[in-house]
Length: 115
Image 1: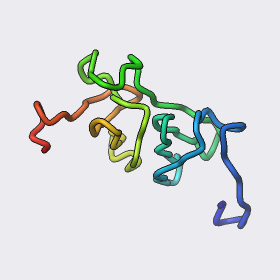
Image 2: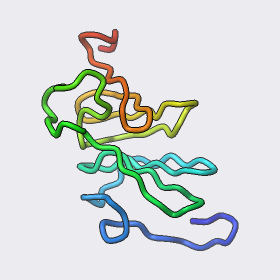
Image 3: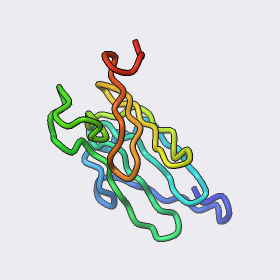
């Protein structure tokens, strides 16, 4: 909803790059809105331009990391924090990740201190 105009806009698989319509988390800022989408990674909506950018698992292998710090490890995302400085924090089905412009660090239990 645009809080200035009170107008609602609906986003779904027909007018966004999402594969599934199951949105688990939304994080809105002044310029961008981030969506954690089950089976669709993270979607970034640019409020000013109305354009979408998607962040997905670049190697397509969701059970293991094939590329070190590849960005998202899994297409199933459950939460997104929005940008904090230069990083977008995302929780995926397999592991949390911090991504910067589509690439970034994956935090695994074996190398990050996370349980």
